[in-house]
Length: 100
Length: 173
Image (cartoon, one colour):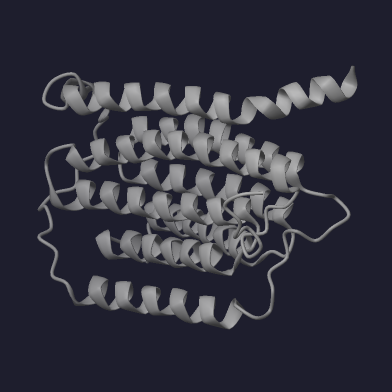
């Protein structure tokens, strides 16, 4: 049980996130996929930090990833809500209008 | 012979990955939202196994306690319960699957081929203190910038989403 196992879990998480982002039409579903991808990246940082270095830089990067993910989720969901109020739809395939 | 660490690792990995697969594959966006909670909890457990105690707590507080709740709120606010807004069309599923599989295969080949410079001994020690010292020392500027960014992002989110609250109040009165 070592670094490679954690990296494989991270890779599978990342792939799940990619599939979610690409296959969803619901804008919130796409955001869920983005969160999975960010988690996979954070897991990789922590795994490398634990198995290859003596410092804490990987953990710090993960701290910033989590903080930025929180900010991104807040803004993105606010935008999705605003779009929903204006267009009554959050299907990414149909949101191709820039003006009403 | 599997050690306790390995058993826990496999259990956490199974929880994380199965939840992630539910998020990716479920036809119901609400199921995806709830599966996301368990995926994040599994990742928090994996952080504990990597001796990142503070990060695990942060993951639970910010992701499980914050982001998933906000996402579920958004799902409830935007979803017409009778419609199937969460379903995936059949058309772009194969292409998405192909792309995700390509990413996965590339990553796995890279992981298995690489010769990582492993640290000789893997010691378990609390990392919160070190993290705090680094954040208020060498990484003070990114720390402050992140705090300002979070403030700006949250104010922006409130301003963007506020019209809906007003409209709802007008609709009620």
